[in-house]
Image 1 (cartoon, rainbow, N blue to C red):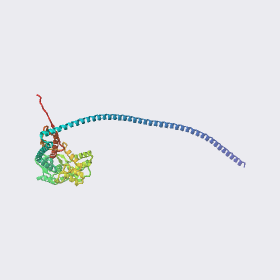
Image 2: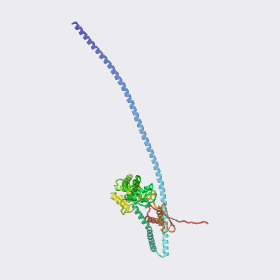
Image 3: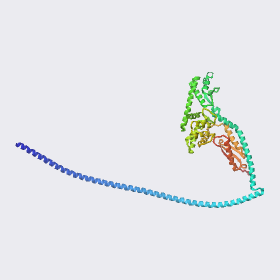
Image 4: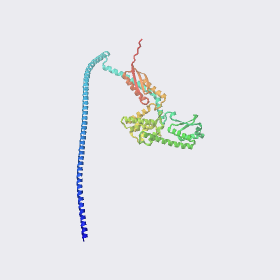
Length: 517
């Protein structure tokens, strides 16, 4: 029993000791917590002071920055105000200068006005004197001649009528004589133009192609046994093949340049291959004809693409390609059409018109020279009908048909195409002309001017693009020189064919020559 009591006392003492230890630990911890809280509060106070100092410094810096920006803005405004003031001062000075100039000009105008008034008064007085003199002279003449002014006027009119009738008759006779003289020339021109319609300008240049061969042995193989190869080639190509004694050459003769090109290429392939017989000839000619046709179409497409022209009918594209094998006065027709198209586009742009339409009309203006069929129509009219057939616009059709004045020009495109066609043909080196024809044209120019009375000498210069006419000072007065120049220009325009324009200069001078001996 005592042992239980002792154990119980021991347990109680242990529990009381543990409780006292826990209570002491709690008190110690409370003290530590209180001291830590105090240190945290003090630290927080210090940190708050630091933050307050930083914020205060930051606010001061921002205030300084705002102040600087305000001062900067104020300075900028001040400089702008000063600049405006300077400009205003300069403007004021300019206005003052203008005002001074105006005042000076007003003074000058007033001075001139006074002078003009004085001159007008002088002129009026002189006019009165002249009127008096005129009346006096008229009275004197009436007294001397015994005719009144009206009677003298009627006689003068009658004499002028007779003179005009004589001059008109002489002029008509001169025109008739000139027409007779130029009839042969005009006939030749029409014949040449007709020949050009079948793609020739001269028989030698545009109807013949020379095919060169290496030896006479190849010439014999081309001829074949009893000439059967030649006959087969002529039948397949439609070109006459001339084999003569000319060494290393065979002549291909025909008016169609496309056929001549087919024959030339076929001969080239046959000679290179070495197999020359009728069956092989027909095969090669067929391949070459197909190749040429494809090349024609490709040339037409490439030309249209290069010029930026779209929507052309396939037949028109083919005709454009055929222009490559045609020529006019030695000028390649396709090159001429491209030049004309580019010139039309530039001129239309300068005039504020549609350059695409102008380029299209310029390219198609000579399309009537290359159709497969050759109806009896001028090439301009034929080209217009072809354009209408293939749904080209009316203004383009009119420009094609009117570029040689066969029909009336109804649009602004027509004169542009006409002018650009003449420019392309008139530039130096564009076309070839026979020397004799060139000399004859210059001589015709000079003789035409010499046919007028009062003309002493005539000179055709600058390749016939300028005609200088020297007249006698005692036979023609200054007024008549201008009339003579207009008459010669109109007559040249009506009677002669020429590229571009011809400048007529009439020179009248008086020379007095003396010798000191």
